[in-house]
Length: 104
Image (cartoon, rainbow, N blue to C red):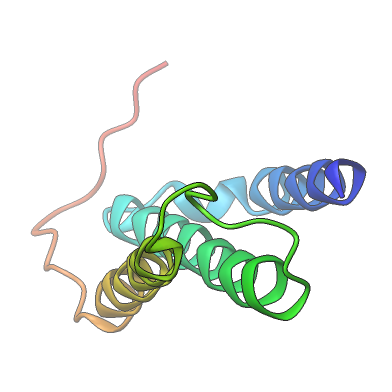
């Protein structure tokens, strides 16, 4: 499990490195934040559905009498993060009003 998670993290870092030139624009912060929220939320959704509910490997708070509420809160966090990421992704870019200044 941990080896797969490290591999997924390495692929994500490689994709980020590969597209680093695209982040040199006025709206790059919004694009970066949107992908960060979508990825973070998707991870929570996948973990909740696969590991908590389908495979039953663990729950957020195992010893709590209401462990399902904790799992649902974790799942909801994932939904909220994906929604924020999609909102940022599809939001109309701001008008920069000029060129980007580069410093060396």
